Image 1 (cartoon, one colour):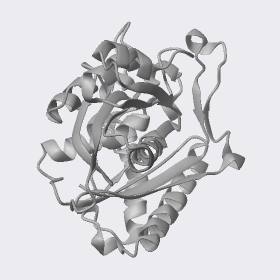
Image 2: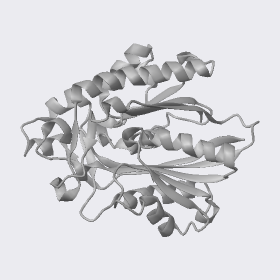
Image 3: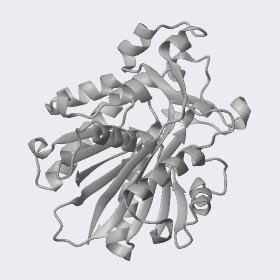
Image 4: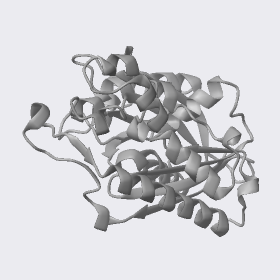
Length: 318
């Protein structure tokens, strides 16, 4: 049994905050932000707009694109670090809103690497437990966990959601998830974190050791690429597209240089979306499809690193 990606869709909130907007209340400028991050603007949730709202809108489109109904779903997994509430899960809210009565639902929190972690879990459900259709959503609203007076972090993040329908198919189909590999390093637990503190409406601000995270993001993602390729008897030349977590354009540039991979074959959507945490990879995938880059039959490599530190990579014959 193989797991194929049947559909990919996404949703971005309507509210947009540009670098110029930020410069009106921060000691910064468009050029300062863009030169250091590759970001020009980010989408932010509006008042009363929740993570589950973004996820639901992406999910509805993904289900329609897959030409199935909510009743066909066996499971709904939401990769998020910013669920609406401590409990219950955003996934259960979405399951109820969709009327997906057969599906069990839960959230998974691996921060920015959440989509790859959830992909690994969903692939296992299909290959080992006989599930047929899984809705995988990655959604985050990190703007609600940001100190908007902290120039080091607030310029980096945006909100958004991506959704894919994963479907079981026979082994002889020339598509599917080839492999996924996960890693963690809890000795660097406090390099990126958001406390359950009293700040920011009892949510806690996001803090980050920027230079250390930059270093380890390049090192660890490069290592995960090398290992997953080696374990599957592949080389970087077998990859048509790399779709990395969209954290910082300079990280992506450095990673490509280290792996000797052409930047022209890397999907980059950070300019208009910023760092949307777990949602960034499916958002980038949908961007690539809509812009006639990613097509059926392409071999893609996903790679991400986030808080934990948690990171991973996946190879997919799309």
